Image (cartoon, rainbow, N blue to C red):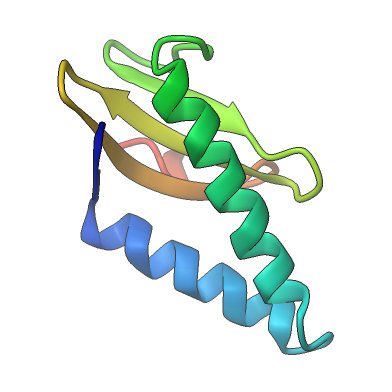
Length: 94
């Protein structure tokens, strides 16, 4: 299944990697690895996670307090946001 990242989501992903790497080099790589593993689960079961809107779903990462917000279409997954779980929803739902 093809994956498409909105520009905002791409920025959030790299921003989060940098955030974790700054105090502890290598932690950003650990975040990226968990992100990739979570994406594999989303690709296998695109409709397996909770809906947060009409078409948007969220999948929580296990070791980091982040979630992947995405839209599952027939042949692709659209990543709309990589958001901290404690951020106010207005910051990532649009």
